[in-house]
Image 1 (tube, rainbow, N blue to C red):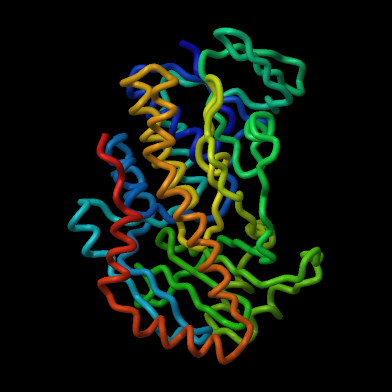
Image 2 (image 1 turned 45 degrees about the horizontal axis):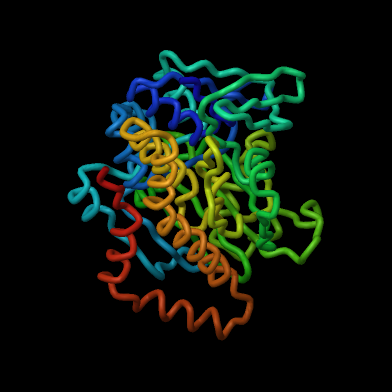
Length: 376
């Protein structure tokens, strides 16, 4: 059986590795001309690390990344509003949350692939379906045929566009900067993910290795506002001085900028012998730190079900298993982004009071749901 995976991101690579370990052979077709360790940092929450533990990568990731023991929301001056102690989940699931450079994770995945071919410079242009096989046509003029196609090509998925042309990408009117910087945080922040909420803006930072910090900054923008109109340094001048230090210490080539968006939930993730995975199926805003983690969960569930059933049964079971949780994350992540960017000072004061007084059991219950992975 020939399996074609479109997209060599974290979701596509994890899927290929999981399929390999279940006896399948796959090829990955990536539109970039070469694979480079691009991107900034990534938080591998407990659910993602449970998958990587099953795939035998836990120690490799733990050795390169940095353990995160708590998640904190603070004011712009880094005064605590809410904190989640992750030790409960470490004991329950026997795994930790790890912050790591996305490029480092990419290298770990690639280095552990044995039979999968990664073919670059293949940008999908057309899908043609016949009785048994699917033909994939690429902009370079090449054509390949596959028994199963997995679309892991991100929020702007060409596979999804060809299967479900009426899907809608929603703009959230927020601009995001992401940076990697040579920096050592004060010892009290060494194992924390901190997100500071200000006026229509927020700033997060986390140590990803001994001397590197990943940070991200988000600012509300007007509809159709040009990103270059916003000056990064000026946008966060009211924040704690550590924020200014992180921004000014970051080299320009380590800075990435994007507009935040998500995918309006779609009710079908597969058609024929073609199935969507990760952001292609359920792209979410980054506000719950679950975008890549959900793609990793997808990879585990889909590969496990394909090893048990024919592809039609597997696709149906995959969507049934993953749909509710993925939709929950898309919905709630969007809502959190809106709450975090409140402009009205009275509403921000009320929000902060509620955050400070949210019962720990409520936080634990929600994260318990996020960190559970299916038992298949």
